Image 1 (cartoon, rainbow, N blue to C red):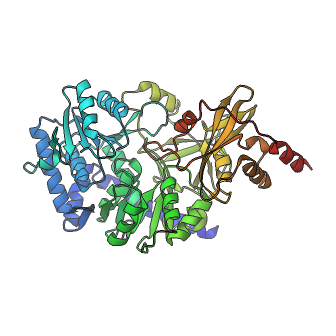
Image 2: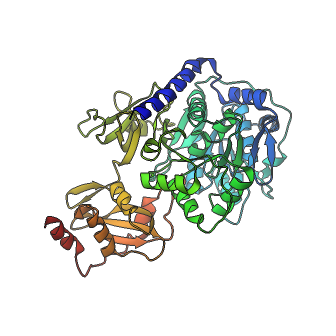
Image 3: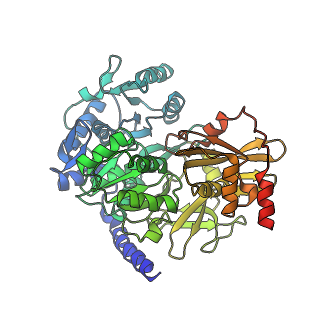
Length: 552
């Protein structure tokens, strides 16, 4: 315990120094870019499979793109919906848009017409930029459909196109950049919910810059950092937690992969000598399984940052051993919440917690069902106040009022426990509970138990409507080797002491679990996939046998 306290004290003292310097640092992205160019101009800033840019080359190209936006009639303050691939050119577009004074609305490559149309109309966007069409998806037809509904919308394409002007050809004179006020909106980011259309989250220059600057320090980034962005750089996690912007903040190099596939990621790690990367749990599970059949030198990796969804201590330990590197965990919300461990954290912190808040001015609380603060070690809902928390959803007063209480705390809807050293462990979702015949329990607890079963690679558990019990439990399982049946799963859970009412009533085997655009398991898609399929009657009831054995 003394080692843990000393570690946390050193870390907080270092970060406190940064907090005291906060007012002395330019807290707009435009000011940070100017400083990066002054300090790191000749360093390699970004590379993809085809292109490499130094800091000076990258920002010169961004200024020229800003000039072209102006010549196209795009004004300062205009919203631009950006659906960017993981290409070096995408950073030119992102930075050039900000230099012009525009507000990028960051869409993900997996967003489709419903989401893109919603972003354009909600933000009253004047411009849409999409990738050129590929075998995977026809983005140009998407742009055409969106423009039909928004005739004044200007559309450009990344790559070559017969229908729209390519941004590759848009290079004007060097734009004279003026820094906005730090309180002005930098980005509009989509929320990560799994129901309905995403809400738009306004993040100010101050809040977003503070986020990646502080996170880069916590993550020990430096000029030697070679950061691999395999997730979409329009995703908040690989963009700024600390992500690509954090790497640039410290003078490092951003390497862009076009997918999380081991065929794409592993050769890049080996050839570029990648030191760190970010992934969601489903991606790291894919990578760990691929190591068995993909011999490649990955020894340059110093740390892997895992976030975006719950990651068990067992998986963290397995990941660290598989790649011989540190595991860094985080918990965050695009709304402006972030906890983070350090790559130097002792294993008992790194494997079992998601760290502690970035700012000493953050005010996280864990509250019970009575609304009162929980003691350390007690589970409750995590609520939050902080210096980089959004003030509300973009032009959505209803959602804002539902999310904040009368004291200004944002209610995350996540269940958490805080340890005596101030580290947080996310244990589940308030809303992802199952009420089976009056017995209410966390689906995440069942998932965590099932991940302990040999042969299970990934799992999602959810409640399915049932006329008699209200809800029954369905487990969607990805496995290696022979698939377990319902009886063997119940037998396993009983043997490790899981109450019978928590045992699955149904098991569905899947090759992969569907993901939302931000990399979370899409429970709605899973529920829909079996909505019309009745529960199968079980010939024998291992629940009863298990109960008798337990009672005896």
